[in-house]
Image (tube, rainbow, N blue to C red):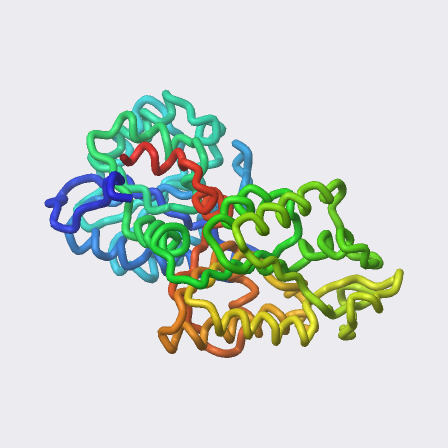
Length: 396
């Protein structure tokens, strides 16, 4: 943390060209933004740079176009949004990165902004291409990475660009992400509870294994819990189950025993015969062959509430159920409410991470309070795991 070069607020950047890497990867429907959370998180820092009379060149991606200029993944809706919010001249660059690229940005004046079209339209971006990185770097005097969610990737606008810019810094959002996650992994207040949900255990086994050494309670929810039910010889009907997880789960229990970490799995659940149906609360030994487990049950919700009430720190990644259907949203919202209540009362430090977790929590009709909401998915998990993230390593 101390080694990372963060953008100094007192640095004189007037008339300097700032290359600002952001995460503006927002969900779209019919070319309309349906969740502006990520953009709104970025706007205060953009405005502060405008106030300092810098020339701002914003780089971001949207989706995975794989080097193809897919109109459905254009940043045009984001450009329109920024024009409305920033109250300055905002331009949209949709050209190519040829040899004369630097001159194409020469018209930019102090206090103005250029948004570059989806950087992943260029295959060289995901290849971490040196020539392409050099062209990107030529656009500015200072590079700032404020996209923690992309920092686990070796890509030109995150990684190799820093090789060709005089000064590279981490931005305030990236700094807040690291500080918040460190509240769990380094500066934690005990007891620490980690709630892990989502679908696949195989994608999270490394982070679970790493966290077990640092936490007191590991709560498994979501479709991931189905694998634990099978491990304990419960029938799960038509529920989603991964193959070959028996050894993985055994390793989790063995390591948890070694480090005195309690593993908590649901004791009841909400089931239906299809994803769009209504739910019935059942004990684990009552699930029939044609039923799907789609949420945690009432007894499990109460048990998790008690665990959260006894905790000083909570890390949560992954929803508790199939939140897309309101009939299976209760588990996730109930967890969110108790975490929010204790965070508001200042008895709890709470870190929530992952796009699905935030999307699920946003379905609450109540205003909720958390210490930190991380929009990052893969980067969030890899940092928790203790991995060096390429986009952060180059800022040290």
